[in-house]
Image 1 (cartoon, rainbow, N blue to C red):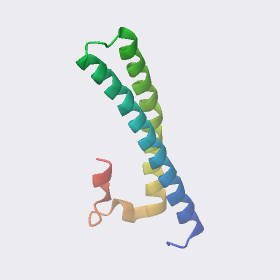
Image 2: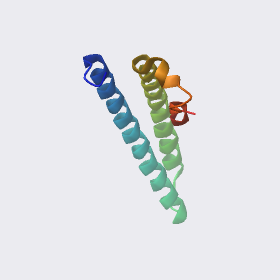
Image 3: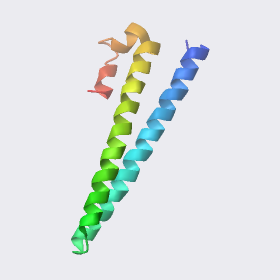
Amino acid sequence: PKDDPLVQRVIGRLSSLAYASESLVLATVNVLEGVHQAELTDSAQEADYVDADIRTFQAQQVVLEQVLEATTLLFEVGGASATSQARRLDRHWR
């Protein structure tokens, strides 16, 4: 199956989804870290909190969809072996 074009396409898509999700999460972490640092110096403004909330919720909406798409693709390409108790792949999305 490793040479199957469909499997390769799905693996590429999974890789892209993981990269995009990680990038969004890290960008959100940077925003939250900025607010945290501003709090430590008592320079945080209400606008900082609002911006952090908005960016967090924006990222959350996209990341949730990407994770759902990725797990669906994984099940489709992995078939029954993706749910195998022996492989315990479910530990990655529990």
